[in-house]
Image (cartoon, rainbow, N blue to C red; front, side, top):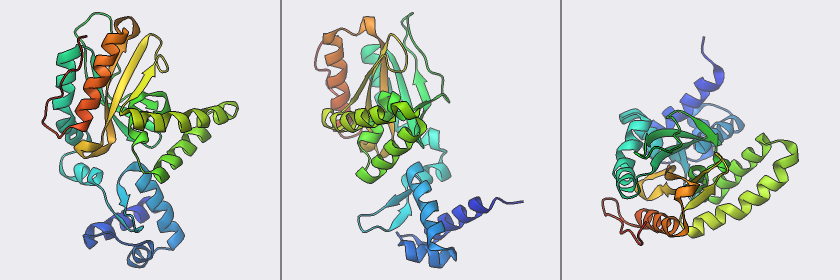
Length: 251
């Protein structure tokens, strides 16, 4: 027995796949023979998950994320794009490098390259954290369109205890613009005591819902090393794919 909401969601996706170009809400409702409010709710969920994109004129089209699922598998496609950068960061700093994907209001860890140093904190692939508690999540959300960013902040706040919602919203409304301006997200002992992370969005690699982070025990993270890591990661996300970032300072 089929589930009605899945039937409707796939009907909308099939219409978009057949069209080959973005369609308006009215066009999608007409082609799928579904009520406009139903199609709008489905599109909102698919857009939040990254499977549908909206143009400046408000039309809807399939995203690269959906294409990667069809052609290669989501994780494999993103790993292939991210791995050269991850390996460079690992070679230069010998700290744990993480690849995270935004799924709803959570970050899922898709790939990890472990440090060779004995003291380390390793997150296993498949683990999830709320996006706002991680540098990975904040790096991604900070670079999303304003409307999508606002929806994710609202959902994260709604999922938090009532007593913390106002403070969380205030913190995110301050931190997300700062992250975008800075070019990277920084998180220190917010998720795990004794561990700091620096993360960059992979939007310039064509993966706006993915990010790479480097996790460092705070005792191995003095000011000079922090500056070197931040500058290296900022250079990496501002250069065309395939160019090697220049390490700005000695670790």
